[in-house]
Image (cartoon, rainbow, N blue to C red; front, side, top):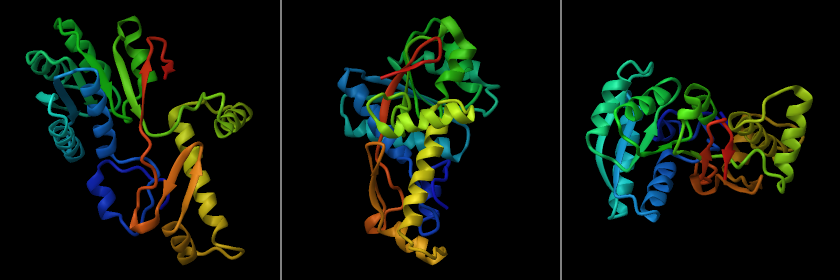
Length: 252
């Protein structure tokens, strides 16, 4: 499997030798977000995470990253059900801790529900979503109420004018009537990694040949270093923070 999606870093480890992940780990994302918060002087952070083992793992990763940046402390955390049913209660719990920022590992409806619940309760923290947070969808749900949301992204900016890979991607999207978005660009880059591996197999690619090619693959795609050498099964370490506007645009 190449370019697949894992719900936790622990799942990646179990798939070692069978899967080649392109996107950076959640540990890398959590570290980048906490590093940013430390840089801008945020000291009180709350964590809202999915109510599943992957969410609990991310909560632990955030706490570990906070310990590495002495000025940042996790003051509260709350699990949120996948349908957001308990988002109002989770929002109240987090708001009571008076966080300066809320780091969210949530997907789908719970994101907007949690943000709305905290705002309605009088809390006004900055919100930071990991890459599973679909910022454009949150903007559709909250509209003018959306403020202070940034997300970490594990693929480069799809709308970059200077990068030829991004331009080619947008051209292909226009011809195929596919939306230009982070998730579609991630699929495109995953396919480029697979094609690179297949080219290294020679004229008669097979399963073992592809494994051998991937285990030694070191390349650069869309300005991102991809490296599976040395037994690594995660190719990229790229993480970038972007802001989400109320219209659903992503700004670097």
